[in-house]
Amino acid sequence: MAQRLSSGASYPAAYAGAAAALAAEGTDGAALAALMQQPNNTLGLHYLIALERLDSAIKPFTVARTGSGYHEAVAPADGVIASATAIRRLLLDGGPEAASPYVPAATLEILRREWQAGRAPLQWEAFSQPLLNALITRSPQQLAELHEVTEGLEHRLRQSLYTLPQPSVEALLAAVKTKRYTRTKLQRMLTHILLNHTKADMTPSELAKAPGYIRVLGFNSAGRELLARMKQTATLPVWVKPSAGSHPHLDWDTAAAAIHAAGMPRPAIRDMYADYLRPPVMV
Image (cartoon, rainbow, N blue to C red):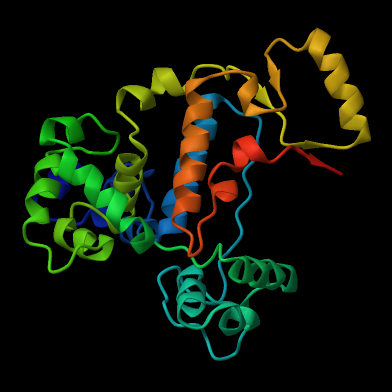
């Protein structure tokens, strides 16, 4: 794969070619390479790899995609199935009603509620100021310590700041993007920069550690009885409120929720710190 990247192939093309080269003898390599350039197929392959590594008992089942393709940005006129990309564009341009032919009624109800409450729409540009602040105030060496900042991207990020036509995330992505780095890869990297996730935090050994707590998000009457028993029998601390304890993963959760809510059209402290201010849901 590295050889294909160095020869100028895009990351998806290099990955697809490498996968085809490793396929069983007799497989149509060209057809497999074309298949692997579809993002959902690549994702499916990684699920299969994870199941194999974990020796999981899960039996995978594939479902063929129908209707619009993954990258299709325009919704079909028949109003049946649109891609997520097309639906997001409809929402940003026309709000929930514009997307109503392509989403279930329950989804449409939620979208209307979130729009009315000022919690939507939410897009990358809502985070342009804190993200640019993070890039401006960190040295290349500090950026290099963050997760997904690889292969000298820390220098490309800093150098791109001087040439942006406007201070926006879209302009930043356009300046940094090359055939080697997909937009999705760069968006993941910017998310980790925004949330200050370091490479040390995200090593396989760190991620493989067992959870340090059980957090209760909601319960019913049966769950109430179970929680009472768990106080005596659970091997991990059971937290109904985040203030009950501290853990790095809890810090990540609460910080991500606060930053997400801060980017809403009408941000509210109660949404930013919902982890602390809202009790578990009782059903």
